Length: 323
Image (tube, rainbow, N blue to C red):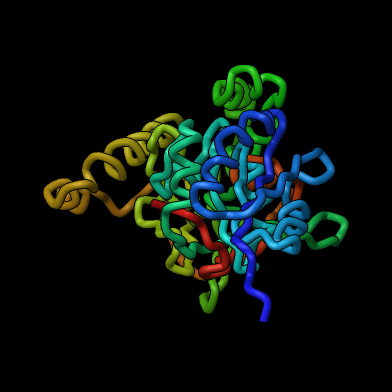
């Protein structure tokens, strides 16, 4: 009987973020020290940002795939690795690196991230699934890891200058926001949580989260759990400037500082009124129909205009290497 060979890792890397030579100098010695075989290398392109490359890597025998790049690269690799039995290893090199932050993995420290990949443990987490209905009737399915949305957030993503983003990072979103927010207004949706009645609402933004923490430590969905088989939904309905100030207060103060202590949670219960600028929902899936086609974003990347969408959680579909 032939003995199985050593395990092999693959690296799917975005060449605009890092060079193969830089990664080879770090990953190949770590793989050898861990007793792994020769590492496979795949460079992303505009035509293939990672999904099919990852599937090729798994077919070639990789039991772990490094995603070296920003959130878009990580999302694409995750789609390719979904339900394959191989594990995702994160080398966060982008602007936000939100999945790494939500899993408490090192951001910007490549040697530590590599060490965790080879010596850490495997955790199975959910993968968000977005089934997009286009205006022409076509249907597309895409995965997301942290958060998806429609409204002001998606409009900002659709209007972000990619060249500026590469130059100044997250400040490019501020530039887009300055142009988008003055003309933004509420829009009408119909939504239905799994096994629940249909509801109608006017919203400024609606977000669908697999994780809850955004850039800068903002707790958009403080109760979101990455492996509970559920999506958390945040419906934002501010009224004017004061409404947006109230949302900022809630995200920074209530969801952050106060929620960390029992006294703080009591203060939230006492001071919270019946009306809220943010409504939180939770379900294994939600279907949304729009009165007019709108942009949608997945993990901070624009995915074009849709007329309807279903978001769901594929429970435990993604194995990730963590501490």
